[in-house]
Image (tube, rainbow, N blue to C red):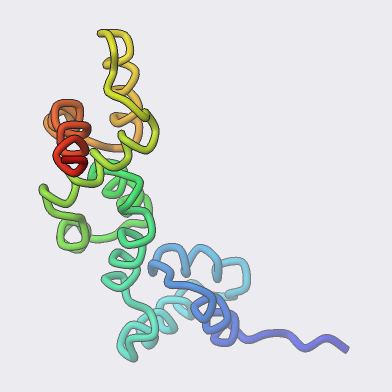
Length: 153
């Protein structure tokens, strides 16, 4: 005889593994709910008890992916989870932090500065794909290896 899990125990089981946004939790619980109002009530209770927090989810998401991606890519990922724009903005890294990340990502992928225009364009496309804006890309291309040379001295 198999026991049928309650909606509450499914939600707790999902949240015990990792942080989830309310939208993601709703999507995962939907197949098991008889009534959407049941999910709404459960999510409301979880939010009140601070068992589920979109703010905590956003911080966790940025912490886990922030060392590889820029603000644009991080913001896009959080928008897909239907988070509030103010929450997203608060969770994103600052300008200086993003520039340092872009330099580190660039140095890791390309071991030396671009030798010619084509190599520079390839590096810029790589950073753009990673979600860095034009100003940050320009800064990283100009400063990434310059900082490294200062460390060697």
